[in-house]
Length: 142
Image 1: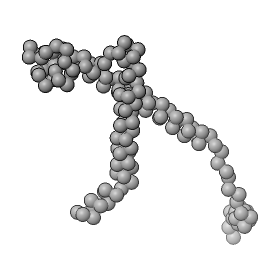
Image 2: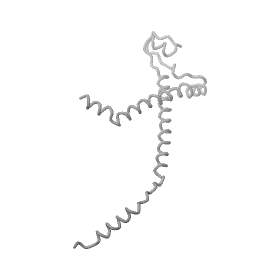
Image 3: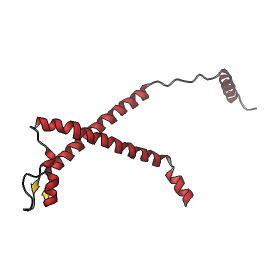
Image 4: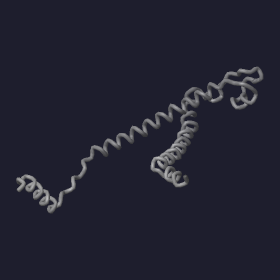
């Protein structure tokens, strides 16, 4: 059973998947930072300094108004629609960035396909042997 597990775990697809997951997590951290540290402040500046992540509707009378979303959640049930807007924007930006990356990769792959492959020159002795084979194939059997 150990041998079978080693065979499974070291299969090419499993290793490729593991590398993809690790790179994907790192890429996700980069995109999350880009959204939180670059895009959301610009969106906040355009909208007059609004911070979407602190928009919520209190569902409990225990929640005081004017608190930050994290503090309001500690006091009682709240509907955090601002956090949802932030996550939805994050998703849209991630999807757009992935679209651009995959589009660029597809263009590179298309360029690679268009390159003509160099045809290897057939050696002279192979040409002669092929001619002899063809001549022998055309001769009637004796």
